[in-house]
Length: 280
Image (cartoon, rainbow, N blue to C red; front, top):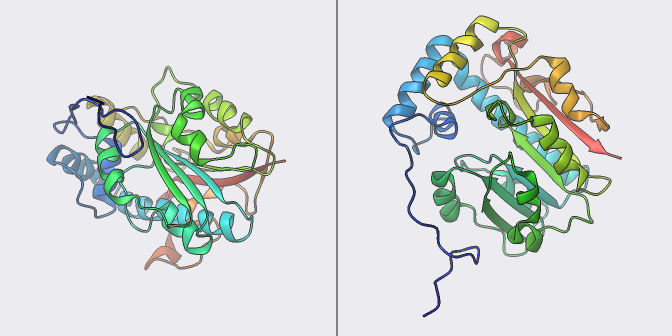
C-alpha cells in the first residue's frame, strides 16, 4: 500500500517532541503579540522578558508592522511577485501571503521554519489565494542549500525571476556555530537581479543591560540570542542597494499608522534594526 502523503506531497513525518516545557522564540513572540499558540513556559519567558525589557510587546508589534509595510512596498512599488519567508513563526493574520496576494493575487509565497508546531499551524492557516500559491517547508536556516534545493520551493518559485527574501527577527536566534552572514550570502547569491532582502535584527546599541538580561534568560533555557551593532547589521546588506530610509529602527522605517504612544518612543525604546535592500 502506498504511503499517504502530507499536504505538500511529502511522506508524513513521525510525531515529534514539541518541548512544551521549554520556551521557544516563536511561541514567546506569539505571547508578546497577544496570540494563543503558546504554553506556560513560553508565557513565563515572556513575563521575564517584559520585566527586563518593558517595551518587548511594542517591539514585537512594531517588528510585525515593519514586515507588513515592507511587503506592501515590495508588491506595490517594486513589483515583486515571489517571496521566501524564513523563520515565519506562528501564523498571525494578516500574514505575508495575505498582504501580498491582496494586491497581487498571483503572488507566490514559500514559508520556511524548523519548528514543528509552526508547521502544524501553518498547515491550517497558510491558505493561498486561488490565483497564487503558498507553500510551507520545514527547514533549517543554517542549511540554506537544503532550502534552495527543496522540491516544494522549486515547484513554487522561479529563481530565474526576482524573489524577496524576508528574514524577520530570525537571524539573531541562530546558534553560535552558524554564520548568519554566510547564510544570507548563499541565499541571496541564488536569486536573480532585482531580488530583495528584508530583515530585522535586535541590537544592544541603546539598551545593552536590558538586552543582556533577556539574552541570559533565553540562554539559561536553551535558546541563543545574539544582538549586533548597526555596523554589524549593515554587513548583511553588503552588495545590495538599501531602500530609503536605509537601516533604521523598525518604527522609523516608512511608518504609516502610528501606535498610541509611539510618537514619544526613542530608538532605545524599540531596539530592533530594520532594512530593505535590492540586488542589482
